[in-house]
Image 1 (tube, rainbow, N blue to C red):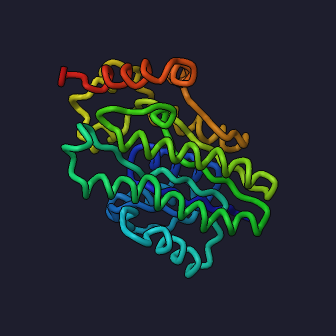
Image 2: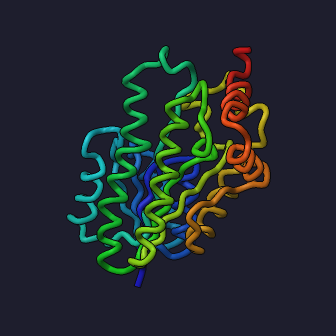
Image 3: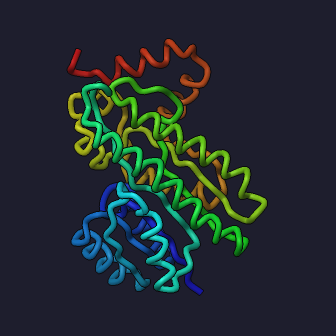
Length: 261
């Protein structure tokens, strides 16, 4: 019997890699993102190469009740979701008080509210069945404050904390929850976050998206609560945990301000 995975932010970057990996492992996949054209192209390629069923749902997860819309789509189509990968998210670079509040609010709605709501909806179903896997994409940003990307770092801290708590709550119910915490990764994140002037991608090692996705998939199968890919990223996380807070926040600021000098 085939199992089914739902992936948000599936049209590009890590989400596209997760869709390809899971389809290659025999999962039917539900592809969720805003761009229907990109999802249709991905679905056609997956069906051709892997012979699994695909479902395309164009949805804007920054909108109120978007998670409920996704959930009702799967219920209406009688689809059981065995794996949930909350990958959709974005950041924004610059001083918080100078930012566009609507964009900041959309970030909270996407990175936090929709993610938590999807965990609540599908996590409940998984617990009732006694099996399921949830992966939430956090970041090494979740371990530290992030001047110049303050709200993004804060949302990823929420994702990390929620995932760790749910990992404990839901394990006795047969459900694993994993927070994948990559560092800089070769996706379209930098462009979408308006972070080209940041030193984040210039001064740090940038990992390949496929490598990060494969690592995350393996750690999800192993039931790991927190997964940090890459030696450099692990070292940064250790530093963030052990160093004084004043050192960490100023270090992040110096990295992030980049060419703003």
